Length: 402
View 1 (tube, rainbow, N blue to C red):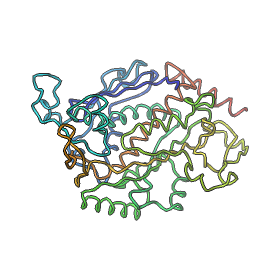
View 2: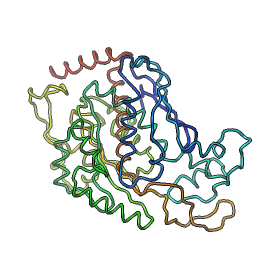
View 3: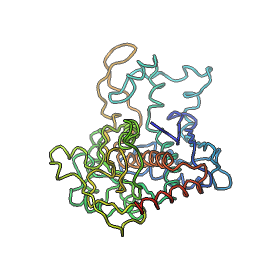
């Protein structure tokens, strides 16, 4: 994978803070903590969230890489403090003097990294696994993704998402197609975020909320589906020349790296299985009046491919669909086995959500933005924003003349 943009996250769920670093954002990008906090608040939205969202009010501190509101071209370091740390200062202390101050977790929860991680890293206390494998880490992914979004917006590339299904309740195909076809990220996100489940149809949203309520009553959890759309993406990002340069593969990798994500489709994805080729290929047309934002007068009137052909963007919106499994931490615990005594037990309950599908969509927006920002920099380079824009504008001009 040919990366220009690099990033890392660190931190535990109940540790002092989450930290992140991102490298190779060009200099000259206007950036503030408020830009990041807007996205962090969106991650905390959603009907069915757990008690942690009432505790944390995430705020990003910019530690480096920005001066007087502009990026410097040097690595940008972020910090998000965990407000719950005050209750865990000894239990999650890095100091050896506090070892053993809280009881070890020895009962692995089905569906988590608990047992696999304990075996792999030779841990007798599962807390040493669950703290890092927790989805709390995604707050930093969203923070770093906010920087990528701000960078992309300078090239009129915008990333948004919406929920299409929770449990057995799904947005009907006709409504989904109408909404997707008319989707404009800047105009649509405010409406979507106002929905408790981030669903564009109010009636369907109420039915989704009812399913979540039922899961709460049963001490259970519920998963669902959502779509991420990136608009304004120019043709030519990604490559066909190696397996790890294909953009659809890179996006799938990035999204499948998010906790509880179990399936990713690009465009029509699995719907291809019962269609003929003539029904799902996006025919090519030539219209010089369309060579504006995306540059190329070659166009398509359908988007079954989800904006990517042969691993390369084709100028249509990039559409990614993903599935989130039900949260595996249940108030109605599943059976498990103690890793020390080997006796059967009911799995321990850690505070958790009933449904986090709306939040997962926002997290996938962030990862999509990071991938697209990287691919844009691979294509156009530039140590400063002005340099990247000159290269981009030159390419767009070339597309119009092709």
